[in-house]
Length: 236
Image 1 (cartoon, rainbow, N blue to C red):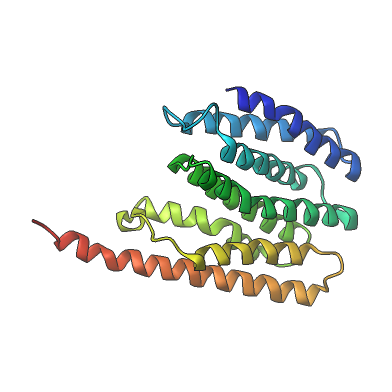
Image 2: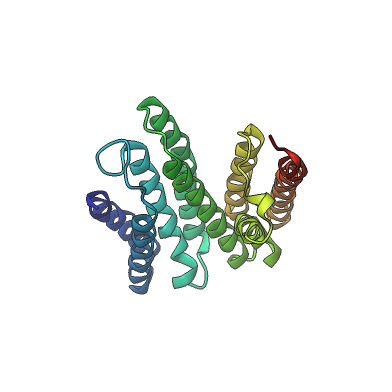
């Protein structure tokens, strides 16, 4: 698809800038390229037969740009043993940009009347990958124990459990609480990585972030399970 090819120069700028600023090994660029190839394949398989516009459409292009930044961050722990102060500041800046952009793709989709299930899923999976990457970096940088990985893994664990518990695959109601907790996770993990944040404060922030996430998933899980009897007993 044209959009995937057109995104390559933007990926080159993001990855090249990160490589140059942080003085990373050349393997970093190779890892970014592999991750983008995997992303492109997944998108091509997930694309619906029709989209409400030429190519991916304006909103999905914004999400794709966000995804480019996320995979650039994902390549960091795979290519270096420690970020250092400069690296942590870089992650905080790039992660903040990704968070700010998250408020635009949905707005553009609504503004242009190009909302789709594919776009919502693409946005959600990009957010989930960001959480996984940031939680991994917090752990690698020894700002919290391995338990912090649960923040990034929670979404994937939920999907795994839902594969054997059909009730958890039902659609959820729209929730500001869910969106707010997502923001708390990303902001909390970025705070943990901040070089000026003391270690004990970073640990406390990570604990609060994980607790709020467990609570939010718990609320949704209980609600979904409670719908199961009603759905099974309902009939004509």
